[in-house]
Amino acid sequence: MNALPFSTRPSPTTYALADQQPQQVVQPTSVADVSELLAAATRTHTAVVPWGGGTHQFLLDPPQRYDVALDLRQLNRVIEYQPADLVITVEAGASLGSVQALLRERGQWLPWDPPASDGATIGGLLATAAWGPLRLGYGGPREWLLGMQVVLGDGRVVQSGGRVVKNVAGYDTHKLHLGAYGTLGVMATATFKVAPLPETFVSLRVTCSTVDEAWQVAEALRRPPLQPVGLVITISNTIMLQAQFAGVAAAVERQLALATAACFTVTDLTVEYNYRALPHAAYPPASASSLILRIGVPDSALPVAMAALATVTPESVTVFPGLGLIIACCPQTAATHLPVLRQALAGAGGYAVVEYSPVRIDRWGPPPPTIDLMRALRQRWDPAGILNPGRWLIE
Image 1: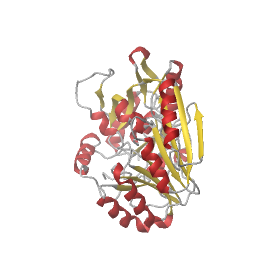
Image 2: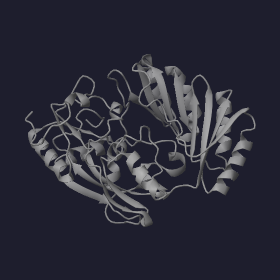
Image 3: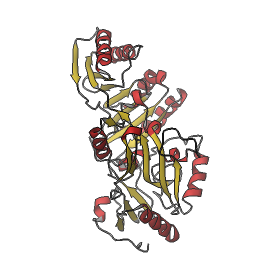
Image 4: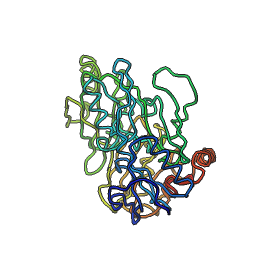
């Protein structure tokens, strides 16, 4: 590898992935810098790994080649913020925590609560399609993202979407980068619609005696007119269900009264006012030897998925009723049972992805039906294959 014409500041060891570390670390301060760097990397076939806060790098395998760590945290400016229009444009290296702090000053927020959100960057969270329990009531980042500027692997800078809520110009190609793990391009800026902060938040926490009881309570809490914005069941040494309601104070109080009545079968019930993030999962991994699985099924098939999980003997499970998602922390020996689990889930229209493994493993399982389209986009947008080579399933 020939060194790219950019200065190196931090130690490469800070950016180690498994037993690999980059030969060079670059911290661009402008979109033009990123464009110039990727164009040069394409010419020299230099492998580039984009970095934000580094909080979600464990979601991917180590790269096949690792020449340059592209640290984007110097791209952290607010490009435009129009509180009256409920729209904000920020550079992708800004942390979600800093953006939320700015919005709170004007009584607004971005209803997005992924794990490690304070230190994670906007670009990294979008690249990994990170989500949290608030997805139940507010949708995921896809619903709030209006537009994006992306630097493609060959250095081209492209813009998709717009900076207004009602925009019909062009295709929403920026949404193809959500969950593409930085293999199709490097996000430079993102524009979001935002929302007024709810007047009141309240969390309801109940301890259940059995998993069946937790399911019954969860179903009752989702029955109209109840509308929780977040709902989580955690199963480990105890079985805990937590629900969150938000909105105008009087409406939230009515929801709380109905929710409390729906929990008549439980004896341990706690109510807490003010916003408190609901549990997501074991991020970062609680144990270096644990295997973390993300399981997705149609919401009605969650009980089927829970039964199938018995084959991998999970140590703890976090279930998201209404989203059809489960995060399971399992012993490393569960890897040998993954094919059986995936086959059972496929029969229910689901999947199992390994979000963390201490050893190299088949993280993704059978490729999705769209894999050929994704590979074609990769070839068109990153023709030299320099971005995160070997880290995702499109290789």
